[in-house]
Image (cartoon, rainbow, N blue to C red; front, side, top):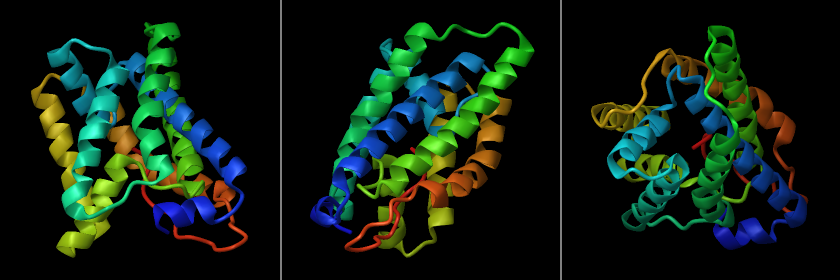
Length: 214
C-alpha cells in the first residue's frame, strides 16, 4: 500500500496507537541493550560509534541517522508513510528517555536479564509497528528499496546492509559483543512469533506487511 492507501485502509486510530506504542517500546529495547553492556544490534553499533565521534545523545544519533537513511529513499523512488516519519523521531526520543532513568547494570545476571528481555521486547515492538501497516521504518525501507532496484533477495540485501553498518560502527568504536550475536540469532524468530498476533486486519483491504524491526 502507498502512503495514502495506508491512511485510508481503515481502523486508523487503533493502528496509530499501536504504531506509537510499538515505536516507543522499540526505542526502550535499544536503551536496554545499551545498559546491558553486552553488545548492540548492528544499526545500534553504528549509532554508538557515531555517538562517540559526535558527542551527542544516543537517541539524537538515532534520529539523525534515520533522517539520512530516509534521504536515500529518494533515488530508490520510495515514498514514506506516516509510520516511516514517526519511526525516524519516536524511537530516538524513547531511547534517550529510557537511558535517562535506566542505570548501567553491574552484575552479570542483571546484564543478561536486560539483554534477553530487550530482545523479546524489541521483537514484540517491531511486530507492533510493522503490524500497524502504516509504513516501514527508514532502515527497512532502504532494504526493500535496494532489493527491488537490484533484483537481489531481501535476505541478501539485509545481510549486506547490516554487515556494512556493523563494520562501520565497530571501526568508530561502537559496542560489539555477545549481545550482537544473540540479537542477530533471535530477533527474526521472536518478531515472527509475535507478528501474526498483532497484525491489524484491515476491513477494506489486508495490505502487505512491510519491513523488520529498525
